[in-house]
View 1 (tube, rainbow, N blue to C red):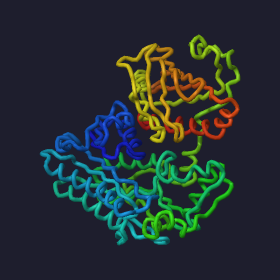
View 2: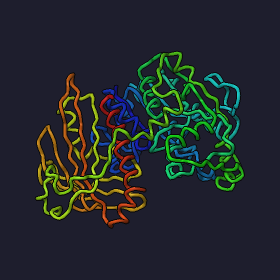
View 3: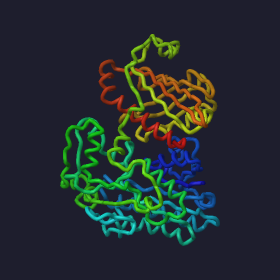
Length: 480
């Protein structure tokens, strides 16, 4: 199907784009910044500006998926922010529906994000799709958000209002906000943690989007949550068990008020939402992650990425020391990972060898953008990127050292944050139109003992996160 996707450069949107491409759909992303979006979404997503006339896109699209909406949780709800919350949700829906009404051949399906904040807090009673809305600010906003999407039903469009629980993924949402102190030994809990926590793993969320696209009998309000909500303290325990957190410190609700304001913006953080995905279950959706511990473990399990001390040093002839800038430099560390993909060898090579696709498989916090690239990639080609390591921006300049079309290529850092960075990519053919992508990185950090300390506490963790995210996105992108 042809899918018009909004909110495509956010955490959920980028994962959704990768998944939809992996399922064989054609994705058109409506974005604010075309250059930035190209760096984030890769070369297989067609981009249109949100300032363009959307009627032609409505004529072209089979499905519209709207995931846009300014971040609401974890910020102070000022009057200006509330205005932006409304504009980015209700205002965007109004514009989309107006374009659908003007189209001679509008899309047949409209999927719109919403939130479980639609429902009244309920610590004990289970909430399904027939439950009523809350009359707080958040409840009213979610109701108006839904009503604006439902206007498309008047022209025969099937509408699905997807009420997301808190989304679990290491590189976005609540885990991105909370997990850093857990990884350094000290966790936090919101209040006493007795409020109910309705959640959904990012992989199940994007699969649910695809499920609703494909099933024409699914419509209306749809809860996109795990069938097993838990108390928040159970979520915190699962997070602590899967990191190195030894101590959990409760954050008093009064302190949340000082940070986020003594109003609904703080109160909603500890509201109970005991929400069940009755429609998904009734229509046969199977969850990959229905247990909180398994879902958290998936995000912090780095066993598929191996980083070790590179013992061979200059005796390792597998990377050619004839490269001028590395003649007097040996590797300290070695990173290895491999991925089985549901694509043939040539398709896999074409994807990985295109610099345009680097951004799609890189977390947003890396700040990846392409500064320079050649028209044709070959041995000796140069590339320039911008990246962030923590809060520090770097220009990264690389060169192709080896290029064997369809089989392998090697790039190495000419200028950047490492003393040595040598990255080997190998594509191996497998049976039944599948292939293996193998990565081997040999690298060295600067600053001697200080660099080794930084590697232990920061650099190694960062590489685990980047390559684990890369695995996830690539597996979704190729239908894994």
